[in-house]
Every structure is written in structure tokens, then in C-alpha cells.
Image (cartoon, rainbow, N blue to C red; front, side, top):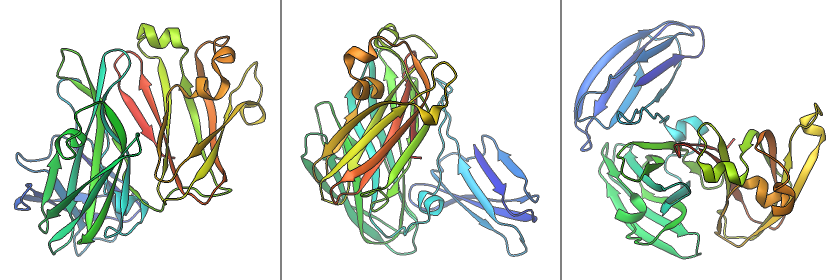
Length: 341
């Protein structure tokens, strides 16, 4: 599905061009969008198309935002796809990071993998280096080239592009040599014996977008179930993992502070737990069950399922730059939501 939003209150018209992987135009359509209007175009992508370019026509007065929501027909799961350079305002010719990618088994018979698409959004041929940084500290390089307007779609990228054959997770840095690019990815799971997928779109960020010394990243509304709930695979309960990615090649120490309300107390006033995490240059650190990692096993075992928590990350030492994300997973389905807030 496509959604087009007019953001200024003025009328506009959207021209939508659909392209196949080779950059060949499949279909063009023009749709009016009223001021502040939202235009939903359900099941609108023609067969064979993998990318869409949305522009305003010459007589438009308004400005448009747009995103897509693919839907897994087997599971009904959906996720959002946007033009990340437009969304975050960074240079599409600059280096970017996909903060998590992997192929590995998780709790409750889940198996997580990452698909990625690399669109050359420019008018000339483009090339660059894809580098997978493993949680082990090793890295693997692959050189890619994509002609103008074409898309390179890679399923299970850690296995099929980087040839990793054991369970592994980490992050991907793409450094263009020539051309302009828009990268999108999704990390998802299948459950043993079922083809249905559940997962989340993963934002592609500018490589220099991490927080540095004295800066904080805050996440609200965090849920983290107790271990017995996780082990039981209880539907509609959630566990939360966090990821810390050092992207500048310098060390950093990150302080995580967990706050939650109890007995009606103010969330922001009650510090429940603090833990420090030291990162080596270029390190990927995944912290599973974040409340357990911060509070410690003994304290965490006295609490039940925790919800609506506040989680702050602050770089307290070092010259590094740290990209931070949280991943909240449904204990019943393995479906996940990734946030970089």
C-alpha cells in the first residue's frame, strides 16, 4: 500500500512512477491530494514493480510526504518503508548504517533474517562497499554496483551476500564511491514449520547520526516481560532488547538508566536502575531483556512484567559516536518493532 500526505494545507497532485528492478518504467499515474489530505492507495503497486518515485506535478501548490506499507499475505504483518535520506535529511551520496542485520535463532523457535534493497536514486551509475560488522568484531566487505535507477534486492543479506553460515548478528555500513542511494531493510522472523513472517522495517541512518559525549537518547513506553512470561511464549506480552553500535572508530561508554512508575509515582522522578556499557571501536552490542541487564538478575526476579518504562542512554566517556536502537518483540509471535527515536 502507498500513503501520500499533503503537509501544508494547499492542494497538490502526485505523479507516481513505478519501476521494476532494472529501472524500467512499469506504470505512471497521477492522483489529486487535498490540502492536509491523506491519500491511501491500497494494493496499488503493479506486478513487477519494486520501487516508486513520487513527485508533485507542475501546478501543485502543496508539499507531499509519502511512505509504503508492504503486507505479508500469510501473516498479515506490515511494516513501513520510506525514503530514509528524505526522512532524516542526509546526503544520499554519503555513508549510511543499517543498525542491525543478522541471520540467527532466537527465543521460542524464532529465526531472524534481514532482507535489504539498494536503490540507485541518481541519474548515473553508482557503486560502493557494503561492510557487515559482526558482533564478534570481524567484518566482511562486498563491492556492489547498481546502474542508474535500478534496484538491487537481496533476501537474507547476511547469508546470501556476506556468506555467513553460522548464527550471527551485527550491522551494515554502506559507503558509496559514486552515485546516490536509498537503502531499505527489514529484519523478520519465521516460526518453525510456517512460511508466515513477522518483523520490522529498520531505518537506514547517516553514519554520523550517533550520539556523542554528553548527549542522550530517550525511549518511552518500553515493555519488558519477566523471564517466565517470555519462556511461556505468552501472546500480547513483550520483551525488549537494545542495541548499541559504535560507528566512528573510537571507544565510548554508554550509561543506561531505567525508570518506571510504581504506586502512582511520576515516571521521570523514579530512577530504578543504572548500568554502564563499554564499547570498543566499531563494536555492535546487543543487550537482551534490557530490564534484566540493567537491574540485575536478583532484583529483576522480584518484579513481574514491566511496562511503560522510560529508558535513557547517555555517552559518559570516550570520543565515540553511538547509534542506539530498541527492539520490542511479541513473545507469542516473534513480531517486532524497532525504534531509533
